[in-house]
Image 1: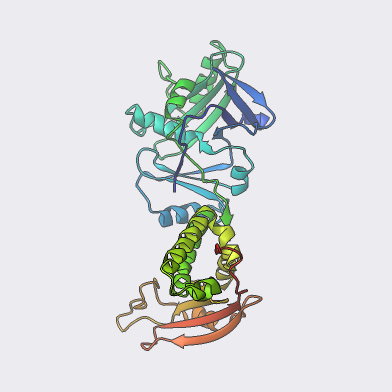
Image 2: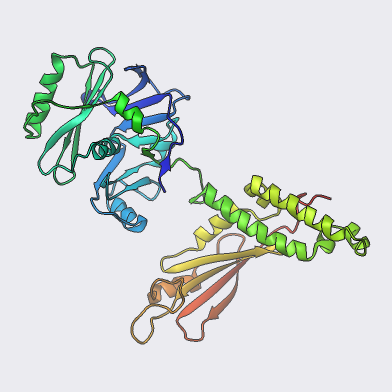
Length: 389
């Protein structure tokens, strides 16, 4: 998912690898840049021209799965890297950046070349058919200005050079040397994008995801799952309200307001869940981070994991395809993508359970094409103060 800034950033930061000088940080002040040791905490948005970004040419639109496969084919990328799937128009590329290089900075990060791709598309410029020189001029020429020279190659490759404090005399020399280095014919008039142009698109340029993960899953997804699980639980609670919510409702079963009181309790609980689903899940003894973590430990290649939590316990089910059908197709179960190898089946059947879990059952489907292995875990059975008396 792409993350877009909802409003124009007021405090812009720049991270750049300045040739032999290494990594440098700058903050935008008016129409100039000021060098700083680290970007301040109040920074709203960061443009990055550094080696932490990995770029992959992707002129055609790719699914998240295919994009991730392309990124992970690079040995420098790992499953903890955050990816920007900007395949197809107008960006025509994938980007990946290590999670530490994202979370250690104070604000969302946009790869500088992705920003360039958007600005060129808005200007109606097509992808280059031969090496082309472009880039940015950040600030007025002279002290406090940063030039970014970028060579765009027909194969989707990109080369970058940072120029500090360029003036009218020095900038043409850098342009000529950079052009010669990458065998580019210097344009008669080099049109570089300015800070004003950057500010025009700052609110719509995608940034790397900075959302916290819980057991490898986005916090918002965990919260959404929590709401679904807990709201489903409320339906069950509602059906046994007189027992769960105390003797007061039992004693007043005949009164006209018993149902109204029960519904008020349910509405109150629902509001509480929506406001703080993870905290409520912990109060209800549904420790979702723990459930996701256990599911992750149970997973093996060619398996699907699901869990059912409630009534003081949780059951995890590991499903593995045992064989294909007569035509060689995958399991008939819709949630299994393909038949597993005998090694996958053996692993699912013999893998020791994680600490605190007990293997509680094995089920073989009637057509012998899939196996379920159940693991049970006890949970405290309490409502933790959620219900309003």
